[in-house]
Length: 402
Image (cartoon, rainbow, N blue to C red; front, top):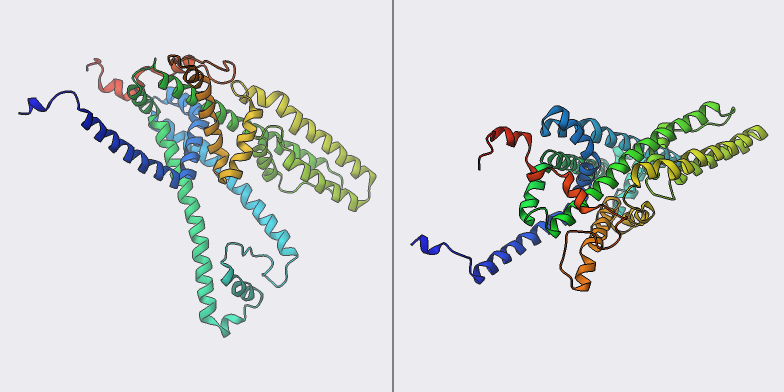
């Protein structure tokens, strides 16, 4: 009886399986949507560090160890540096706001995260701590509520970053196996689906890894520039938070055309205010010289030489500018990573699939439109190791048995 059940699937069976696949796809889409920030941050970490991990894997001969070293020595220090810069900026803004506030602590502490109905109570407590004695229960309740909310926000951020790092590590460790699985799913390397996936994969690596190198390069250059300004500045002039401003300039330089203007122009304005207070002509001339130097080093140099050399070999960075600017506006902080991914997916669809669909021609795994814009899917396909096997897989089956 068992032999009679073996055979080609009936239409009803196929419909049932497709319905099951569709249901699971909807669930998976909902989960991805619920944790989209963690997912895109992990994907960014993977593509931004994959070339480094592969270089290490060639020397260490272990994907797991190479992925762990990449995450611990590259991704984590970068996140800590960005967190340090953000914390210092928050402190400076908070101090500036507090300088105009009233009371001993009321103008210094940021109460924006406190619910409106409790904000007045907390502000009163900070301005008049003696009320703790007269209203101990109400004050204790407010302190516990604010503390729980602050702890929840910090814990949530730590969990999100931790899960993103874990996702990056998983992708770095298993990218060969995942690539082999997609190759088998798509039916081989000569299929249109595989060519499209390979082109998107190569574009994402080119953009995100190039962006990481460019940000680090510009952060170092900007830090040196601000440090030199602070060292050579006349008496009464100085650049605060040199390291923080350097990191922020590196991040801002990621946006084409904008480059470091959003950081170095406020720095020049700050120096200009200091120069006007001193009333010295030499100080004003120094500020003008600093502006010219920043324009050459932090604006012309990256746009003319550094950015095209590092990040501009495949995609027009001027076009990506819209993705980087509109992404955060559309989706929030994670839109900075998500919209470039969506843009690349659309771009490769237009280049490889859409022209033949519109004309009604047979689909082929070749570029039909915009050959010089993105990745050549054939070269991207040839760069991927065949079969997606790893060294460990080859050791387990030295004879190549089926």
